[in-house]
Length: 357
Image 1 (cartoon, rainbow, N blue to C red):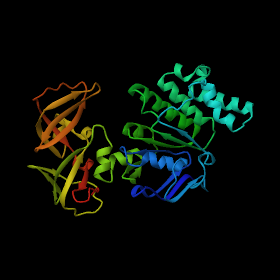
Image 2: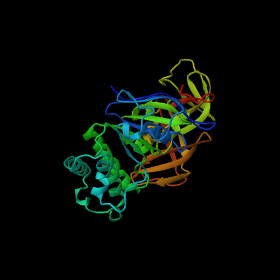
Image 3: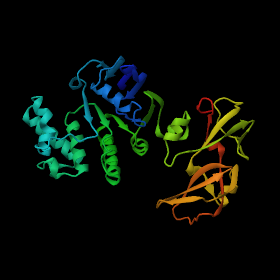
Image 4: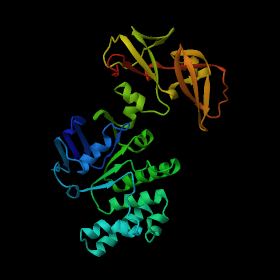
C-alpha cells in the first residue's frame, strides 16, 4: 500500500520551472530521503506535499485521498522544520500541547499524547522548562515531539539537524532512526547531507533541477549509480573519475590500461569516450595490490590523517586520484606505493550522456 503518491507534479514560479513532471510512490511505513544540493527542489517538493505551496499541475495523494488542494491541517501530516520555531514564552509542555488545545481536544487526551511523546523522545524532565533553558538538541526533540502529538501517519522532516553541531547531529540521527523503527510511520526526510541519507533511508531519491535522478536503496545508489552526477554526489570522499576511452575489453586512460573483464555492462560492445569511476575505498595497497586486475606504482603527494582513516592524494597516469588507508598505516609525502583496483567493481559513464554504461 502506498502512503503518499505523487503524479505528474509540476511547480513553476513565473517562467521558472522548479519541479518537472515528478512521479513518486512512497510505501506505508517507509523512510524516504529526498537528497540533493541546494536549489534542486527537494524542500519545494516537501512543501507541496505539506500543502504549503500550490502546485502548477499534477496530483498528490495521501493514504489514497486526493489532497492536492486540501489545507495543510486536513492532510494528516506532522512537519518538523530546520528551525525549531518554538514559542519562547511557553514551557516545553505548552509547546507540545498548543496545537491540540487549538483543535479543542479533551484535556485528558492532550495530557496522554504529551506524556507519550515526551516518553518516546526522553524529554520528560524538560516539560516545565522554557526553550531558552534548552540545548539545541533538546529544542529539536521538542520540535519533533510537537509533530508526534498529532498522531498522524505521515511525518515530513525538512533538514531538521542542519542547525546542530556534528556530534549532536550524529546522536539525533540515531534517535530519529530508533523513532522510526518504533513507530513505523511513513517519514519523508529532506537533507543535503549524504551521511544522513545513507544511514536513515529505506530508499533515497536523489534530485537535480527539479527531477529525480535515481530512486533506490542506499546500497543500489552507492554501488550502481545511474549517472555521473549521482556517483559524484554519493560517497565521502567523492568517487575518482578517470577520463579515457573504451577499446574492446579495455579502458585506456593516459598511458595506462585497465581490463574490463567482468564489468557488468548494461549493453555489450560499448566503445567510445568514457569516465571510469573508482571509489577511494576500493583502492588497495601493498601486497594486495598485485592481485588486482589493474595495479600501478604511485607517489604520495598529500595525505590527510582523519583518525580511523587516512586519505591519500596522488596521480595515476597523469590523472588525479585519492584513496583511503587504515588510519594506523604509516604514510609520508613522497613515499612510493603500490596500489591496485578491480575495474569490475568500478562504474563506467559515457562521456556524451554521463549515463552509466
